[in-house]
Image (cartoon, rainbow, N blue to C red):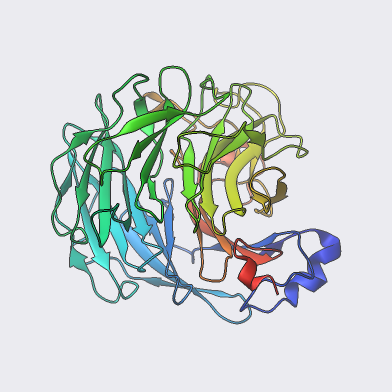
Length: 424
């Protein structure tokens, strides 16, 4: 167990109670929890969910699903809870926990469809999910859930996947059956290419972020339980020359945050208070860190004015997505407590998680693909932020040794969280 935080606050942070996040040290700090040896060694696309009732985390790494619990001292215990008859090969692993119910979906992509299971007891038992399809999609799926939009009641589960036409299908029965696929990226500013992880607001609006919506990054929005979608463009979001997907997160009051890399590779975050109709001018969430390039967005939000964005960043100038790049990447998490007006960023890894380039060209890459396409983030029931990432370095000294993808969780161990009720 390794702690990362401001040195002068270290003694205070270690003494913080585990039930809430004390306000005596407001600067966030993180402890890293790598999977045990031999576990989660191929976690290039990790995803994470947290049961809000118990604060246990579920972590997807390739074909395996893990349950991670934390004791009063913050120590982690990993258990393998992989569903029976799990995929022998997983083209795109994915896991999502519904923050409103604790129901978790785990599985991955198999051709045009995904094979998922669901659990309501943190992996002790699993139920097969209806074969979730969005043909002719064959890549980069996302599964997410939340309240149905009025006049419907109950909860909706969404499954979206990427190909020439971006499509989503929805389930009103907890994932047992899915409706027909619906195109989501068409319209005035069509969205092409891969998209980020979807989310649902408390009023039932669904959101799927995309990097390339003709004139910039955008968010595809549905207020009709997935029957129809519109696209809203994020301000000042000219597509970067290389990089990965934007991210969205919804608050308990219905605000929506969106994070993306701008054309200069900066970590930008914007906010909408009206379900994506209007967005604030984006702020640089990594300002002051001296980063030359950022990538891999993962957003999580709690109270309306509180959100956190996790990302990888490097201080080395140059083309960070080209072979021969010599820089080192670390994991950072930046918090806002005032609706995105100001941000507090900290390094959440205790050293580099990658040395050298990160290729953003998918299957055409000739190297630099150990970290693949994304990281993930979630909030527990006490407002702590947890980040799932792959450690590509594991103590490596130079890019030649940075070829790992070790599944790791960075868990907030001090400072203000995303729920004011647990400030102290």
